Image (cartoon, rainbow, N blue to C red; front, side, top):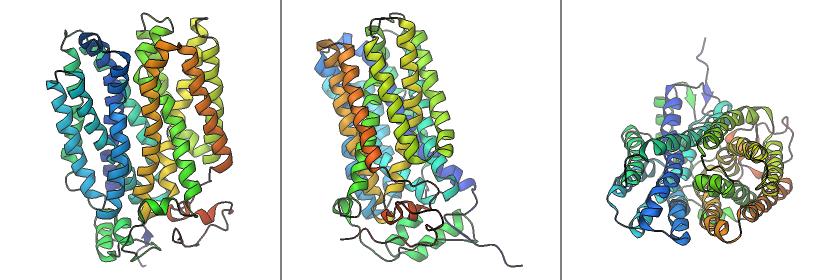
Length: 457
């Protein structure tokens, strides 16, 4: 009996898939940890350095500004030189900059270092998820990508508990908080040594033999590429993202992710401040409950991904988020029980929906432009995150919490409208099928065996 043959899309899940998933988790854990720990550090660093609202907003958003630049530059570079080099080198940058935070003497130095950390993390958002999706079998692709959100949330929650513990270490406690992020960064850097190049990228460059060797070595000797794109040896760059065939997907991906992450980053970067504004002076209980709902929501979101269509999950999440956040703005300064209930509903659904931000972008773009596409979507989303994170402390001081929450409710409403108009359905398709706009509107029986076309002229 001949040995059963598989393609990379339907290969059995093995230890290598688990390894590449675990390594990609590193960036999301570190990103969540970096966001959470700066919120805790600012409660000590801010008063010590007598920071005004502008500097508080700049430092709070500095890593997000770096994420914007890193996802654009390194995402594009990964389409030109490959994923593997950036996958390793960016964590060297992150680790060095994280350690140097311990020695800063003022806000400007901290701002620059966190820009560098964000630059490295931005590259990993583009390259890490790209590498993971290009190795993953179709059956496990969505759950593996979505799990990254749970790890991000775990990093954020862990930073809160570490911050609460370290804040009693005196005036330099903020230094220990920030440098504590070097521990997971160093581990990720060491474990990523030896990661192979993406075989799908190699095929798109015409290096089919190298791709086959990697597949047989790491995924299985009876596994073949099964790709329909071969020998292009060129990358279309950012101009391809705005071609007639892909511009609607580009617009949807950017707006969809921007409108989800803007309230996420803005609110949870300054969560201790928001809770005090809501009247939770002793906010450990409220903060713990919100962190718990973040974790439970991100885990439950994995089930939602399996149960619901991409479109249905996206549109429904935006609807609930808009209503719950608007409700919170209306009952502000009212019953603390009702405020916390609305906040918990918002937190749970937001955490669940953020699984989509890691799955959807990877399914929107073809292999030869996927790094640039994910990088561009991430960059656009970070514009919103930077704006929201910078403006939130200013808005709280000038207009109050209700106005700030209403503004973010409008952002979420825009996301719902855009999703109703443009969100494609990519669930249950192979990676080539999902990234092919020609499949929009096809039935499952029609989707089979249709090759990916080029992104067009």
